[in-house]
Image (cartoon, rainbow, N blue to C red):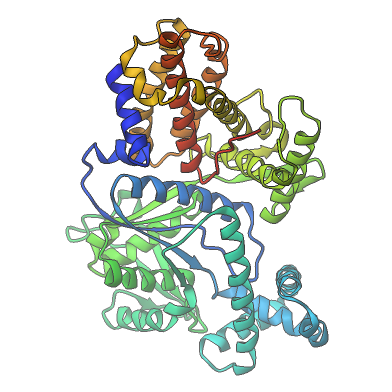
Length: 503
């Protein structure tokens, strides 16, 4: 056990326990491209985008920690049928004088509201829906110059908002890409596939690729015999799949990676089957095998005291209000400095949302409730933060008396109490939890581990009392509690959270 504790402490001294433990395993280094978040412009950032963002960031962090060469991409949905709806709606519903006088935040809200209004109208008004499709077809054919300024402004405003939003969530990408950048290549690719007779143009004008299961197509699944992929609409405009194909060839040229991971909801399974189908029909079976779908389930509803929400901005606002209420009225949660209340409340809100999301297996559907996510007595992100802050307080109060206990602990016997042994055993299980999380790309393994460690640390505080104990008892106890705090901090950081030191 002493060797395990020393291994954790040594890893901490080198800067990151997670990084050092994973890299010591000697994983074969890979080049990995990971695509996550990937929202649509001029549309609200909803809970599905949030799931992709926080799962993708965790997977990105773990892969980099293991020593892989990772490139993260945010692939913006700035093209497609929704652009036709947005542009058509802008012409129909937005007054130029209101638009020109609005600041960027109000303009973004105008764009969002306009898209929702336009999409809703298109569901019941076939003429309007047809005109919206025609707008997009003209834009893709580059025959609609009057619509380009709207699209360009929508793209710029959305990017500015997303940059601010990602900074708030502490999310970074190595590269921003967008669908519109691959339209020309997608068109050329479809023409080549028709010429090679891999794709066919049907009588209704649609361009499709059918699956073929034979001795050559050995990588096709047994269930894919009736699968087909639609690549171009009757009006000759491209589809999301077409642009995705062009994008992955661009990524191969840029990165020549071993894996191309996409953090996308369960509902996109068919999309990736079709993507691989076309790649295999093109003779790109090796590239198809490198495509990985890091799938996740659906959030069936996010409820707050004010009702259900779908937009992440509203969700964060509700979380911060609840956190402020907890800080003001809870006996167990206090913030020493008034100027820190805002930042602590925000971190508590993030902790509640993120830990509640990542505590279950990715593919699971779930319903979110702040009442459960903010319960300090149960498994929750705020509970981990509170236990971490209390352990920080113990270190601060005892460091002056016991000095460099991280070094001197080796001169004393290990803690012999049952709870001390149980805490040390739990610390020894951190490395296996990391390995399992990495092998399955499942954040829940580390989140559940952090819950267990945090709860155990709370029950250990009284039996492992430090104040008033002789040095040979106090130092080993303080070291174990300090190491527990460090591991909890690593778990929080892996989730994209800032560990709170006072609360």
